[in-house]
Image (cartoon, rainbow, N blue to C red):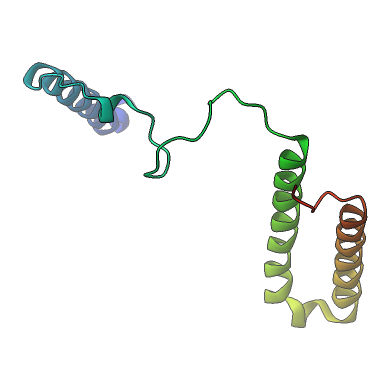
Length: 118
């Protein structure tokens, strides 16, 4: 029974030795050449703006959560569209209720001013 796992253990051992060897070899062969550009934080190819410890507004997080919620909710429509013919009228009614709940949430967030950016 142990013979079945020998190839897997050999593969894992080879991967560990190979990864460790490459990391050690790269540290032994290269010399560190620090420059200002290498030490500066990378932010989409632009110089960083402001301090990294600045506080964000709560509206930023609300908009991010709303985006995630509505994005995930719309992903639920893809399987429904794929099986629409088999679901029949009941599937259409269920999706209508689902979209109506999404619409109510969207209107609520809109009326509360969560979508306005200052």
